Picture 1 (cartoon, helix red, strand yellow):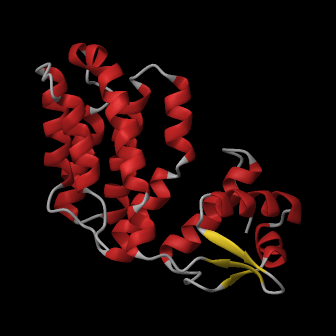
Picture 2 (tube, rainbow, N blue to C red):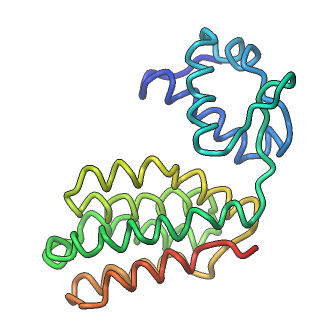
Length: 207
Protein backbone atom coordinates (compact mmCIF):
# COMPACT_ATOMS: atom_id res chain seq x y z
CA UNK A 1 0.00 0.00 0.00
CA UNK A 2 1.28 3.49 -0.88
CA UNK A 3 0.00 6.80 0.46
CA UNK A 4 -1.29 9.73 -1.64
CA UNK A 5 0.63 13.00 -1.32
CA UNK A 6 -2.02 15.13 0.35
CA UNK A 7 -0.78 15.93 3.86
CA UNK A 8 2.66 15.47 5.36
CA UNK A 9 3.82 11.89 5.56
CA UNK A 10 3.53 11.90 9.35
CA UNK A 11 -0.08 13.16 9.14
CA UNK A 12 -0.99 10.49 6.59
CA UNK A 13 0.48 7.77 8.80
CA UNK A 14 -1.29 9.16 11.84
CA UNK A 15 -4.62 9.13 9.95
CA UNK A 16 -3.98 5.53 8.88
CA UNK A 17 -3.36 4.43 12.46
CA UNK A 18 -6.33 6.41 13.81
CA UNK A 19 -8.63 4.86 11.23
CA UNK A 20 -7.33 1.43 12.22
CA UNK A 21 -8.12 2.12 15.88
CA UNK A 22 -11.55 3.61 15.20
CA UNK A 23 -12.53 0.85 12.76
CA UNK A 24 -11.45 -1.88 15.17
CA UNK A 25 -8.49 -3.18 13.20
CA UNK A 26 -6.49 -2.67 16.38
CA UNK A 27 -8.51 -3.52 19.47
CA UNK A 28 -8.01 -1.96 22.93
CA UNK A 29 -4.91 -3.51 24.50
CA UNK A 30 -3.58 -4.77 21.15
CA UNK A 31 0.02 -4.07 20.18
CA UNK A 32 0.79 -1.76 17.26
CA UNK A 33 4.03 -2.83 15.57
CA UNK A 34 5.98 0.14 14.21
CA UNK A 35 8.02 -1.97 11.76
CA UNK A 36 4.90 -3.64 10.35
CA UNK A 37 3.19 -0.30 9.68
CA UNK A 38 6.33 1.06 7.99
CA UNK A 39 6.47 -2.01 5.74
CA UNK A 40 2.75 -1.86 4.99
CA UNK A 41 2.91 1.79 3.92
CA UNK A 42 6.35 1.55 2.27
CA UNK A 43 7.88 4.24 4.47
CA UNK A 44 10.74 4.39 6.97
CA UNK A 45 10.11 3.81 10.65
CA UNK A 46 10.96 7.42 11.61
CA UNK A 47 7.65 9.06 10.51
CA UNK A 48 5.73 6.09 11.94
CA UNK A 49 7.47 6.67 15.29
CA UNK A 50 6.60 10.39 15.11
CA UNK A 51 2.94 9.62 14.38
CA UNK A 52 2.81 7.17 17.28
CA UNK A 53 4.27 9.80 19.62
CA UNK A 54 1.49 12.19 18.64
CA UNK A 55 -1.15 9.56 19.28
CA UNK A 56 0.42 8.80 22.64
CA UNK A 57 0.14 12.51 23.51
CA UNK A 58 -3.57 12.25 22.64
CA UNK A 59 -3.78 9.26 25.03
CA UNK A 60 -4.99 6.92 22.30
CA UNK A 61 -2.01 4.61 22.65
CA UNK A 62 0.45 3.86 25.41
CA UNK A 63 4.01 2.57 25.67
CA UNK A 64 4.38 -0.52 27.82
CA UNK A 65 7.90 -1.46 29.07
CA UNK A 66 9.24 -4.50 27.20
CA UNK A 67 5.98 -4.81 25.25
CA UNK A 68 6.07 -1.85 22.86
CA UNK A 69 3.13 0.34 21.92
CA UNK A 70 -0.48 -0.72 22.31
CA UNK A 71 -3.98 0.78 21.99
CA UNK A 72 -5.22 2.15 25.28
CA UNK A 73 -8.26 0.46 26.76
CA UNK A 74 -10.44 3.58 26.98
CA UNK A 75 -13.54 3.74 29.13
CA UNK A 76 -16.52 6.05 28.87
CA UNK A 77 -14.95 8.04 31.70
CA UNK A 78 -11.76 8.53 29.64
CA UNK A 79 -13.76 9.72 26.65
CA UNK A 80 -15.92 11.96 28.81
CA UNK A 81 -12.97 13.93 30.21
CA UNK A 82 -12.36 15.86 27.01
CA UNK A 83 -15.86 17.35 26.76
CA UNK A 84 -15.72 19.97 29.56
CA UNK A 85 -12.42 21.24 28.10
CA UNK A 86 -13.85 21.32 24.60
CA UNK A 87 -17.07 22.97 25.83
CA UNK A 88 -15.13 25.75 27.50
CA UNK A 89 -13.08 26.41 24.37
CA UNK A 90 -16.15 26.44 22.14
CA UNK A 91 -18.06 28.70 24.52
CA UNK A 92 -15.21 31.21 24.26
CA UNK A 93 -15.09 30.76 20.48
CA UNK A 94 -18.85 31.38 20.21
CA UNK A 95 -18.55 34.62 22.17
CA UNK A 96 -15.78 35.85 19.86
CA UNK A 97 -17.45 34.58 16.68
CA UNK A 98 -20.97 35.84 17.42
CA UNK A 99 -20.68 39.22 15.60
CA UNK A 100 -19.25 37.62 12.44
CA UNK A 101 -21.68 34.68 12.43
CA UNK A 102 -24.65 36.98 12.99
CA UNK A 103 -23.81 38.45 9.58
CA UNK A 104 -22.76 35.29 7.74
CA UNK A 105 -23.25 31.63 8.67
CA UNK A 106 -22.36 30.29 5.22
CA UNK A 107 -19.33 28.38 6.56
CA UNK A 108 -21.61 26.38 8.89
CA UNK A 109 -24.58 25.76 6.61
CA UNK A 110 -23.07 23.09 4.28
CA UNK A 111 -22.28 20.93 7.30
CA UNK A 112 -25.87 21.20 8.55
CA UNK A 113 -27.20 20.19 5.11
CA UNK A 114 -24.77 17.27 5.00
CA UNK A 115 -25.82 16.20 8.51
CA UNK A 116 -29.47 16.03 7.46
CA UNK A 117 -28.46 13.63 4.69
CA UNK A 118 -26.18 11.65 7.03
CA UNK A 119 -28.98 11.38 9.61
CA UNK A 120 -31.38 10.17 6.92
CA UNK A 121 -28.94 7.50 5.74
CA UNK A 122 -27.66 6.59 9.20
CA UNK A 123 -24.15 7.29 7.90
CA UNK A 124 -22.01 7.37 11.06
CA UNK A 125 -18.82 8.30 9.23
CA UNK A 126 -20.45 11.35 7.64
CA UNK A 127 -22.04 12.31 10.97
CA UNK A 128 -18.60 12.39 12.58
CA UNK A 129 -16.98 14.24 9.68
CA UNK A 130 -19.59 16.99 9.40
CA UNK A 131 -20.14 17.37 13.14
CA UNK A 132 -16.43 18.01 13.54
CA UNK A 133 -16.36 20.20 10.42
CA UNK A 134 -19.19 22.34 11.79
CA UNK A 135 -17.45 22.89 15.12
CA UNK A 136 -14.09 23.56 13.46
CA UNK A 137 -15.69 26.34 11.36
CA UNK A 138 -17.37 27.75 14.47
CA UNK A 139 -14.01 27.93 16.26
CA UNK A 140 -12.30 29.30 13.16
CA UNK A 141 -14.91 32.10 12.99
CA UNK A 142 -13.60 33.36 16.34
CA UNK A 143 -10.60 34.74 14.46
CA UNK A 144 -8.33 33.55 17.28
CA UNK A 145 -5.57 31.31 15.92
CA UNK A 146 -4.38 30.23 19.38
CA UNK A 147 -7.90 29.10 20.25
CA UNK A 148 -8.19 27.17 16.98
CA UNK A 149 -4.79 25.52 17.46
CA UNK A 150 -5.68 24.50 21.02
CA UNK A 151 -9.03 23.09 19.89
CA UNK A 152 -7.43 21.12 17.05
CA UNK A 153 -4.72 19.76 19.36
CA UNK A 154 -7.43 17.95 21.36
CA UNK A 155 -7.97 15.51 18.48
CA UNK A 156 -11.71 16.26 18.38
CA UNK A 157 -12.43 14.13 15.32
CA UNK A 158 -10.82 11.05 16.85
CA UNK A 159 -12.63 11.41 20.18
CA UNK A 160 -15.97 12.11 18.48
CA UNK A 161 -15.57 9.01 16.31
CA UNK A 162 -14.61 6.88 19.29
CA UNK A 163 -17.55 8.13 21.34
CA UNK A 164 -19.99 7.27 18.57
CA UNK A 165 -18.49 4.00 17.36
CA UNK A 166 -17.19 2.48 20.59
CA UNK A 167 -19.83 3.68 23.02
CA UNK A 168 -22.82 4.16 20.77
CA UNK A 169 -23.40 7.78 21.78
CA UNK A 170 -25.66 8.37 18.81
CA UNK A 171 -28.07 11.28 18.83
CA UNK A 172 -31.45 11.12 17.16
CA UNK A 173 -30.62 14.06 14.93
CA UNK A 174 -27.22 15.68 14.63
CA UNK A 175 -28.58 18.10 12.04
CA UNK A 176 -31.39 19.61 14.11
CA UNK A 177 -29.12 20.45 17.04
CA UNK A 178 -26.59 22.11 14.77
CA UNK A 179 -29.27 23.98 12.88
CA UNK A 180 -30.49 25.38 16.24
CA UNK A 181 -26.97 26.71 16.87
CA UNK A 182 -26.88 28.39 13.44
CA UNK A 183 -30.29 29.94 14.10
CA UNK A 184 -29.10 31.32 17.45
CA UNK A 185 -26.15 33.03 15.74
CA UNK A 186 -28.38 34.47 13.00
CA UNK A 187 -30.89 35.78 15.53
CA UNK A 188 -28.12 37.31 17.68
CA UNK A 189 -29.22 35.27 20.66
CA UNK A 190 -27.36 36.76 23.67
CA UNK A 191 -27.15 33.27 25.17
CA UNK A 192 -25.58 31.65 22.10
CA UNK A 193 -22.25 30.94 23.86
CA UNK A 194 -24.05 29.13 26.69
CA UNK A 195 -26.10 27.24 24.10
CA UNK A 196 -22.93 26.06 22.36
CA UNK A 197 -21.42 24.96 25.67
CA UNK A 198 -24.57 23.01 26.61
CA UNK A 199 -24.67 21.47 23.12
CA UNK A 200 -21.10 20.16 23.44
CA UNK A 201 -21.61 18.84 26.95
CA UNK A 202 -24.81 17.13 25.80
CA UNK A 203 -22.75 15.07 23.31
CA UNK A 204 -20.50 13.62 26.02
CA UNK A 205 -20.67 9.87 26.71
CA UNK A 206 -21.83 8.86 30.17
CA UNK A 207 -19.69 6.64 32.32
